[in-house]
Length: 479
Image 1 (tube, rainbow, N blue to C red):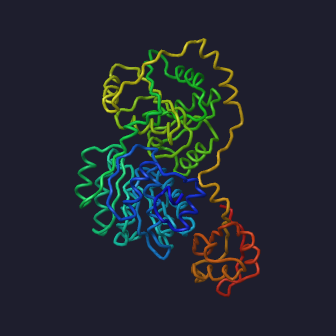
Image 2: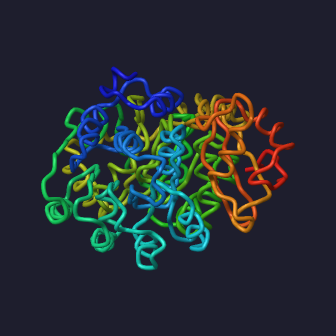
Image 3: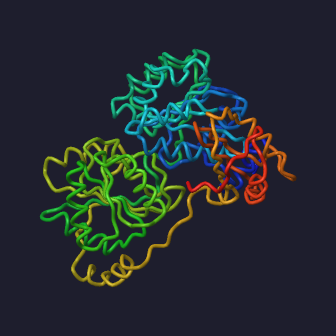
């Protein structure tokens, strides 16, 4: 692995990469990682699903030291879901270096994030609005940021965040390292690079084109009822995992109710749902607890879900880049996928023309499935939707399986510090600081991760031990 990634990484990073299954770098990783390790500013144009998070995450975690107390890395993302996903990925990569990552996004209490940032934290990942709020209030110290990563820059532009990105940059040191990643490169993104990056290396991943070569693109002209066409197509395609995109949350709600009434194993996702519900639904979909996700574009960008083999544009995207973002949910990591788009009005031909000019080819027009095709496929479809779902392992399952999270009933009010827990736990025979992961000290409680399958012996020993002379209750954490 060390040879494959072309750098003498620390043992902690190599161990995490091995347990995460990173054996061979993707093209974007091969080209970005050596430059990032040399602290070069980089602008990367690469399609979604190409391994961009690891391309910046691996060198970022390698460069950051545990001794840092405040965030030195800042990652900006367009959506809350992507912020959480990037946080999880970076936490896994930096697990054995004990790197702590905080996610900062709206619709989560500011006070919770403020408390998190008061802990030893190495990297902050967040949406521009909430990150700017923390900078304005001084809960995030901009002058200590050495690495800035702007992820999914064209989506940040589309969502109107570019001005906020500029404000955030005004808080940061001028001699920072900046990396920008984008699936497309509109003029305003190029201007952003020119304005805020003195000189930079440009990387464009040409080999896969603007959409992945392993995705089949089909178009259906709808004369009557889109719902019935959708249900016929899902019977014929019979996917293991499918995302259906609508343009509005009202359309998502209506279609979800329709499919649910037909016993489809499905759920819905849009901006009108509570944040905790959105994160739970996305996690359940990734784990394969249901097959069909009906969603707005909130799930159309940057979300890494393995083995989505069918994407349906129930409503044609009205922005050409949206087609690339949506269809990029399938055909990931070299797997094959199918993207189907419905068009049912003459005025939608304008959107179709823009999309086809943008991607450089015409969508293959298909006839609606015949009754005999649908009837032939019905039994297999009904068997699949009636069967018990096979739950997938979470990314990082192997890595996290060796970790036990312990709960102690003492924290800041008892004047306990991370060094106190490290000292106490290292008194256990056979335990060293390398066996201790992230320590989260709150007002009245503390969570400590024990690595390398040593949780049980630490738990047993600490029941009869003290931390800074204090006898604390200790048990396995429930979360």
